[in-house]
Image (cartoon, rainbow, N blue to C red):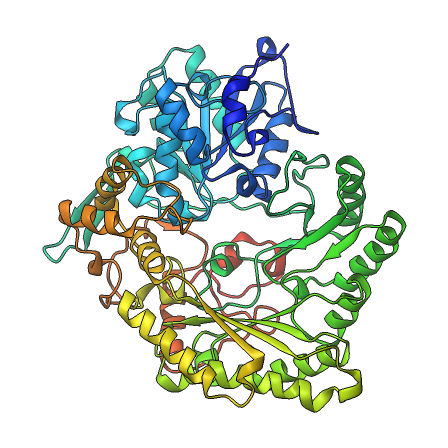
Length: 626
């Protein structure tokens, strides 16, 4: 019988002990004696967040389909258990077997968000694995990172043996086969990593050297071995209808962020918003077949018992067979008494009709994401959304019985002016006015409620805005106060509630997002001073980070507020995400000129993704390799 890694005494002392006991419905247990490779899949955040991540569910299912491999899961222990594990020197363990992570062959860490970097060190530290990759031997697992933050892995390069660049379904099998061969032939860890560096999509930081100019910018970034690539092209799944997808996702014992079946209907996005990293990284857009989605929707509901299914996509409205899929789900889910969740929809007549069918009488809030308050600034960011479209959508929603609207904006976007900031309040006011103009008094179900929220803009790699300066904390806060003052001046101010995010954390995210290898020492030192769970406001220690950067001699403005020339070498330029730097330069120039770019269905913009010859690019000879 499986023995728990934590005693009952410890489990009774910590919040939500179900985070640590495993044995959930659909979790996979294999016979260790029949397994050649043990893989620990990690999400470096608390269980409830990690269990909601679809990518891990997909890879967990894929690895466990391999007869020679057992994939287990591990998440960041919450601070209460973290303290106990350090005091009692308990090694971090996998949920399924409860065995120590240090005994596994691989530790795979998905890196979704820059503010989780210190949690990566927490995972390694509690696992009793050396934090620095250079200090590991065959006694330790191969530590491999993936996910969106691996597209600029440099700030955490010292802590990883390998980064997997791109979608995980394609190259893990060759990597595991290489590992088995190397262990059988008793080659050194260094030799294995040198061979792994030759596989498509694999970046092994120790085999690349960086040199710097006097001004701190990068002079060169070169491989130290002649037989490994200078540029690493991302891995991509050409046909997302014929690949791994979990029929039996693991069902947690406790409520998680995504407490529902998640059905990924497509990958990529046609929209080309210039601030959006995901929209560039996951090009080209690839749809899953309607037959696959219908089959998996029913199987996943049957195998989990969930009472809700969510359609996952960067822009669900762009799925070509959405109407057919939704009507199918409405019919089937009515029988099963299952709710349907439709995030990422554009607010138009079809969407509202669908939402009216799938939501109950107490209509929940509708969400619009104008991102910017003025049409000028929406053109700069290539949002592809006009004020007329927003107001028409609001009118349709109010006529359909909704009276609560959430609006999402960003402050600090490139070229932003005071007029753009005032536009946030003015647009909120116009939407409130539409309610009173549209819905007669006798049909109103209470007052209209408009919640306008602003986040602070963080420039990200592989976007047209990677050249943009970021605002300082003081500038961000002044913009938030300007927005608040503008809301108070509106006629319908009592119907508008305004929220804004933390400025400190946004600046920190900006430092890490465009950072280079010189940040590794600061991240390590901040962790040693007690920084973990930086993504959680109550645990984020901005003063400690500021002090640490000063002690390490790091000028944070270098990574945030300075202007960048078009010919600067970026820390991530050795990675080819499919979208060319020349395309990003053109988009940056068009942003400064307030010009928009059509979406991919309207016209090919020669971004470079056509080289993959799949999805929307499969039948185009667009010159996209420019």
